[in-house]
Amino acid sequence: MKANTSYIYADKAAWPELLGAEGKIAAAAIERENPLVKAVIVPIEAIVIDDFVCYRVRVRIDKSGIVVKVPVAG
View: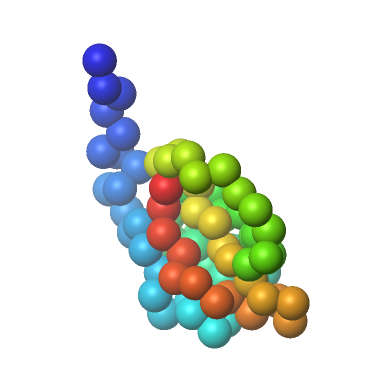
């Protein structure tokens, strides 16, 4: 039986406008725009498990703390 997770996407689920922004500011904006998700700052070189968590948004940053991938819920 598949869980109903559509309520997570009632708000915004992708933030292309944050590409190039400072990571901490991007994470705060994501959580402000969609309070149902948790933004997690992750260095781009970090190895992460390729799992889908509908309420998580990974904010991938470079060594300068700048967002280098579009943050997307999941």
